[in-house]
Image (cartoon, rainbow, N blue to C red; front, side, top):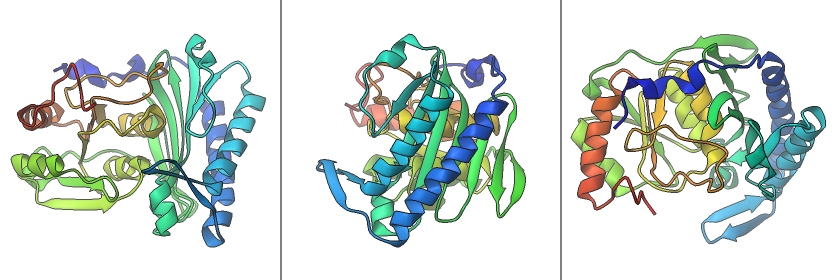
Length: 294
């Protein structure tokens, strides 16, 4: 398990990213308009794998976001869920990491719990992120070391995580579509009684950044870099912490984009204490740090 140094993402952002942030906000909102067109109308559903749906909304938003990034920042790398990965990004220090529609199952279910996520990693660590919920208009943004904000109905609200240090008083945010029994075991171990359920990793982490929730635990290999980069940048900028289930930093712009060792997000107040309980439960279930949740 790592020490508190794990929370020092990129040692404060080494770049002036205000231009990139303004650009990311703009294209996320533009993509949100595209997605909403399909949301109120219709969108054909296909399956990349038995449990991985993709829609016209995913592809249309992706095309818009990626083409705009390529036109404005041609020297940067891009990793996007719905684009072919030619691995040229591995030669770049700056990489845009995009999920054009996180929560496709929620989009199909028409429950509003989906988001557009645009992040940037610099030398393997997240430095900037935008998460936009088209159905509500909410937009989270953050630059590591420089703060996070929520744009809601035209008002910009500064974000900071809660200061709760007693797990019995904390709120767990969990998945609507990917519930695991081991999460219930961890919740009981931590004596957490309050829980919110929502789709989209970005929206879950957004709840932690705005003090609606305090903890998110995902002991599974299901998340990929495009699910995590923007949310990690935002929650870190708001004062929280994101690691894998064994307390290691998440590394971005890797050849293998899957987060095999799961995910723990918290307000950062007692992250190591939370990890101790997580590690006890997951290792009792037969998982280990070397193999992860393959």
